Image (cartoon, rainbow, N blue to C red; front, side, top):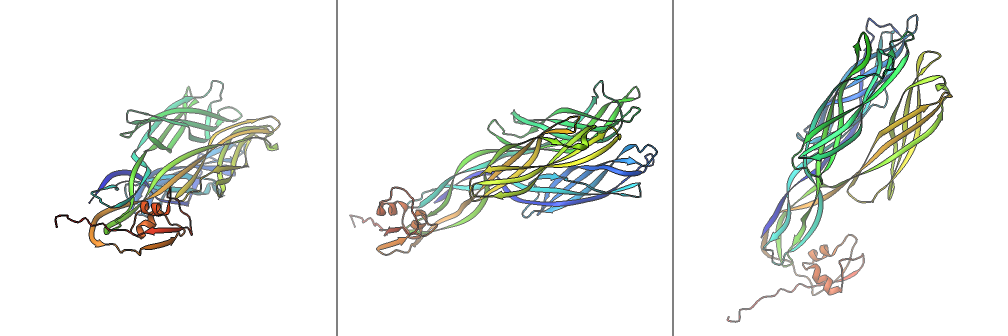
Amino acid sequence: MEIVKENVRASQFVGHENLVELVEGDIIVPDIKPDILSLIKVDGKVFITNKEAMDNKVKLQGMVDIYAIYMSDDETNSIRGLTATLNFNETIDVKDCSVGMIPVVKYNLPTVESKVLNGRKITVKCPIDIDVKVMDNKEFEISKDVTECDNVQILKEEVSLNSFVGYNTEEVSINENVSLPENAMPIAEILKCSVDIVNKDYKVSYNKVLAKADAKVHIVYIADDEAGSIQTFETLLPFTGFIDIAGVNDNTEFNIDYNVKSYYIKPVYQDMKATAIGVEAEVEMLAVAHEPKSFVVIQDLYNPDTVLNYDVKNIRMEQNTKKQNYKIKLDQMLSIPELENSKLLEATVRPTISEKRILDDKIVVDGNANIDLLYYKLDKRNIEEKKIELPFQQTIPIENKDNVQNEIILDVSSVEYELQPSGQLRMNIELNLEHDIMELVELNVIDNLNQTNEKTTPIASIVIYPVKQGDSLWKIAKKFHTTVDAIMQANGLTDDKIYPMQQLIIPKRIYRVELDPLA
């Protein structure tokens, strides 16, 4: 007998870890700027510049760009800004991880703790939430059939796997000068800036993935006018990247991660006035491609008459991955007296999940949209900050299956706001909750099969067997060296459904010997 095998390349879930990395450092006030009287706002942006899978660990390199807005200790109590960059390295233990595997990293900086020291230094602490998932793509052999298998009973199962097609990364550089609107005040100093990736999309063309998105650039700046007013400017910069992956087609499924590795925004001068900004950014795009394919796999086999010897190796693979997206819309009118006679500079939203409850047929997600309002008091000519929490709850229907991993990813789709003179703030927030369902399957790989001359142990003429919990006709037939068809025929069964404590007649296997008529 020979085993017929087939090569399969599929995704394998290796491990998942999360931790909080505390990055600490100082912001020093340069000599050309006045002392700090009080802090108005300190915040930061995280960048992962390199990630590498190693033996039983994942190594990360990154940095935190910190900005601080403060009231200066001078005659006019002017508003000034500071920036600093804090580098960090982190090694995360992930069992069974090895070189060449794919680490997928999610990260978030929910808050920055700050304290002023002697008016010339700010000490900061940045607790970064880091989530690492490691995937591998292995090529292995499955056992699909047996040749010359007289009287061998074979249990086959058709399984659907995420057949791995390939993955690749592409880095896109954004380098543009963007003019301010004609009626906008020129820039004296940029206090705060950010770059976020929005409007993500892709399409497949000629073995390439065309990934496209917009870089949303937002700045808060001190205007170059007599009053030193505070202004804002926002723009969208479209960009595209071609990611080469051989063998992709319209049926290929993709996971694309966008990672802003760095950015730099500066004023651009013309005729001694900064009427534009220069934007430089590096965006990394990671695309992982899969195709669902079905395979027939031998899960078990035996011979009712003779003993078979074979090896069995169990492999746990990713069977199917589904993505379900839910839009969470928060549209509220908020009464905030502090915003009266103010100019709203920005409303930053950071969603968080406070609790996940897995019930029989659903997941209940409780969370908050944490809103950070930065506004300019026109009468005081000062910047102030206010934090608001908007709670939400989302119910996700699920199928209660074994070997299923549920992953919840929450991010911001859009934020719109309108401030009325009375201080009423209309917030229209749309969050995107992505539910990733990863089904895992355990496959038995049969190898080194050979049939011996040893006869199986015969059973008594009549056996009445009470079905036990977890039994199947296959298990019972294999145990008593008979066949599923023989048990069904002896008990008048029309299908293979049985139930605990059911009494089954197990027929005795009859060995037939052909006699030579000429002997």
